[in-house]
Image 1 (cartoon, one colour):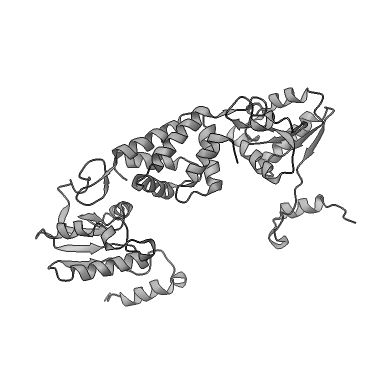
Image 2 (cartoon, chains in turn red, yellow):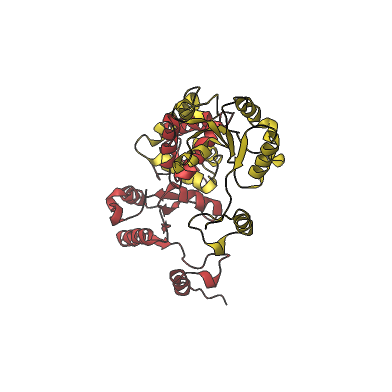
Length: 198
Length: 198
């Protein structure tokens, strides 16, 4: 244990995801010992981020205004909606440059264990958006884990009666991966989703 | 890349030691999405820490006043000085409850590669302290790596002519470790420092 404020700083840092007590101590001392204004800048950016960041009223992405950069971009295809769990998933998909449609952030996935049901997710907002007849396709891009799959299944049923095609990202072997090290589930999915190539 | 302040926050967090771009993103979204004042508190504690924390004028330990808790504690043995590289090393040693003397923080270790020589360390302050005839022993507790060993060797030579005993922490097999997995250097040191037990 350290004296007063040093311990307080370590405790606060240790609350961050992925930061254990040892890393928190290391970060705290780094911040204290730096000559320049690393701590000062971080403190200000933190406050500013908390003040400025809001969520896009259309898709739920993080944004500094009521409409995020993607929803304001007239070059995007508004007939294609990609449903993701979190804002950070948008960033991952944007990096691929494969998708030119827009997004819808659910704000998580269905997980009865932590008490998240469909009502806790932005599903009503999604249904409202889908009332627009210009929307042709909903791509479900939830995480390929238990919660993500449950959410995708729920949404597939919910949207089943609509005149919109509902698709799901392909599951299979990761590129650059090794067949030998693939887990059974992934390998099973890769077989299930095999495609003819000749 | 995210919009404005979100990316700024990620960039600032990624500067912290042990925090890569992925963790920085995870922490940033955690801070943004939290309802309560996690970010607010962290921001304040950071500023407060930077304002309040100074270094003990005697030993160089982090402290909220000019003299740290250890140097102000009259129950400590002021005749024993344990020389460490960083304030956090003091914490590690204090946890053992083995040592009742006082400390001296060098502020690093000799490392020509990163441009740290003896002049960048608090060695002059150490010599000043050692002028006190009540000091009986200096325990070198630098890290058992290249830089720490170089620093210990330098200090051993420097203090060689004084009437004070200079000792060094024992190197050897870590408790709970496995002989099979010990590296050659450690095992070598364990042999070199073997003690008679009968």
